[in-house]
Image (cartoon, rainbow, N blue to C red):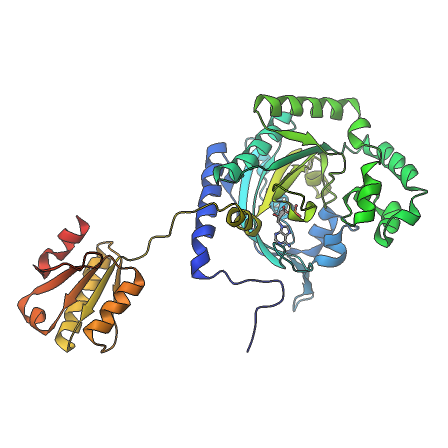
Length: 417
Ligand code: AMP
């Protein structure tokens, strides 16, 4: 027996209503805010991710699905959605379009992580990116949009966390302060963090280990070491979020797991103390990324959320989603001649846009009606030997159990009505 690879999941038909509904809501939301869909392919040049996500991040160090293809190109299955969108922005000359360029995606993401509830090795992300404007009103719009996505699905009691991690001008000074603080904390932090003190000090604040969390709690705060421009940006953003009545709180340990962020970072978390691993979604500004990938300076801001986590939280909060349409008419028959008529009736109805389930094989009428019941059909069209030759069919109301004979030529008009 072959099994799903560890950390992956099949999405069975009974789960599809959640998926289709959430993806449709995402698309509607994007339309409201003027974001257009982009689909990039599943694999990219690995160097794109190493460069953008950062060599010292967990994703690049431990989690990428990378391989060389037959011509020796080094490729990676998309471990996050922003870098491919920036690559596409550059490759297709989108800087010549009206700015900001606003794009969204719904796409599989691959990370070799330790699987657990809500954490998979392939998951689906909905994300959106606004490229080409530095206005904190755009950050506010992205945050409002993210918030509205969850609230619109019926999720409640969510927590919105915000921080600013500064820019390339003010961050180096802050990192020095952080290193100073951590200098004598070697005993208190994990091995990875001891390494991070040298390689990537900002990541110290992001460590999920219990001991490291408490050390991070008292660390110097980036928002208190911003340059005047970053300070103004954060102040404006806070004011705008206030206007929009978004209930955010500042969290100075929030830095996000990817290196490309500048200034604004934010996360939306479900209620309860479940730690950063339970985060519903997050995003922020990445004002230097497009330039680092070879473009002209292009400030940008974006957000991404995992659809599996959204579904997990919807289920926990007993949120409901509409059922997907399914045929409510079942066509049953008895005998060869009737079978041919049944095929015709089913084809005619489907051709007119009416969903129909058809019986197969030579089962008894009783067995076919049991099958109709099990399928949830509201009505059955029954063509027996007698009906076949007489141009009629029996129309049975499966709920009330009542039935009547109707001319087959009238079936379509009756059912459409
Ligand atoms: P990130 O790109 O790490 O900021 O992740 C954005 C969102 O994707 C997270 O908030 C989660 O909702 C979701 N996510 C990230 N990693 C996983 C994973 N391994 N399995 C399922 N969902 C994930």
